[in-house]
Amino acid sequence: MVQDDTNISRYFNKKSKKMVKEHDKKGIPQSMKYQIDDIMSYNVGSAFDVGSGPGTLLINLFELGLNKGYGIDLSPSMNNYATERLITSGIDKNAFEIYEGSFLELDANITPEAISLHRVICCHPDRQGMIAKSISYKPKVITLTIPRDTPLHRLFFLILKLSAKVFSRLSIYNHRIHTIQAQLLDSGYSLSTENKSFIWTTLTFIKD
Image (cartoon, rainbow, N blue to C red; front, side):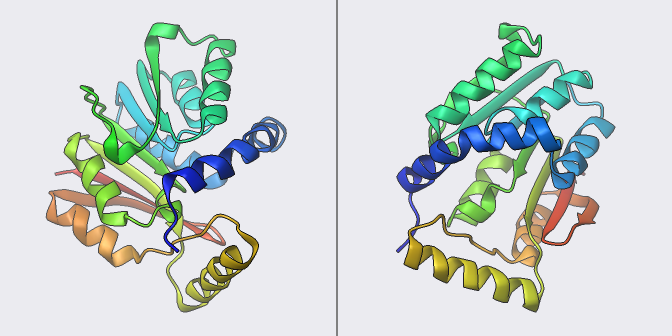
């Protein structure tokens, strides 16, 4: 069964409190650090975090000098945490906007210079739509983190996907890296950096 937005929202509502505690205690994931460094290396003034969760990536971008931040998440609980944590971090309420709902259905008149998709495409069956929507904002930078694309990793994530069906967990979609790259290259972007961890690959593209 194809995973829908309701299932994703329900899953991350349950996970929100735990994720906040993990970020506060252990710090942010290395893959997120890669994306933050890449975004700020291009001196962007605004950024849009798709699947923004509890606002961690945006908070770190603001601490490094971001002027305007946008976030969107399907989970109301995540959005509540994001708003609360951004304000607690001293970010002006007028400096950020948090949207609730589907990124693919969002109708917002915004012009972010960078778009982040951190471990979000792997939760969504419509890879092409997510990338196309990101491109439609014409950002200077698009950075994303997805599962590594090797035979061993594909097998690992296939097992996770099968177990998700059995135990009603969140399904993981191991989209092929070359299809993502091709879509972005065809739209005038070029690959700037690629960083790998044990499970994840972080790719950052810039507009030529």
